Image (cartoon, rainbow, N blue to C red; front, side):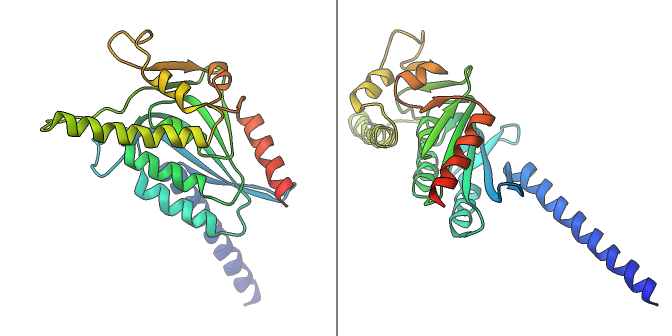
Length: 239
């Protein structure tokens, strides 16, 4: 009888373990999210990925890789409220997307009280720029790119003057946010945004790796090792 109870106990433990592993796998596949729990340093770091296109109020096609702001915002709120989580590492590889949704995520990240670090992998374009600088410290890999360009809109325009004023206001919000959370000036950022020399059929600037650091947008060139090490250092300093 006791042997049966013991076997039952192990079966329950194995079942719980498998269920937990399944939940972790689902978080990675569905939300690009995983908890890095280092037993040696006793630190818990929440990893979030922002990939593809930032999806706003309209659903994009199933063939698109997207980051949904209605998923990210509750996750960030849960991270802030969880005392066990020491810091947040955000991986970025995004083409940009919905401006309002992107700014909402960026503002949420910037308002976190926990140490935060971002790492640009591949690219962080358009509205990905404020997302990259929203953390307390930022990294970019040597081949990472960032495209800075004016705000665009799709669809029919009824009032040209009114629409232009509206776009200017949105653009101004982005410029001020990036200026506040990085070392680049408003005027320098605006000049990069409106540059007509680089892109053949568009306006803007493409910066690669070290160029983003020299411009004052990103703090440092580095990869996962450097980003994690710096985040752990920030956590220790806070403790």
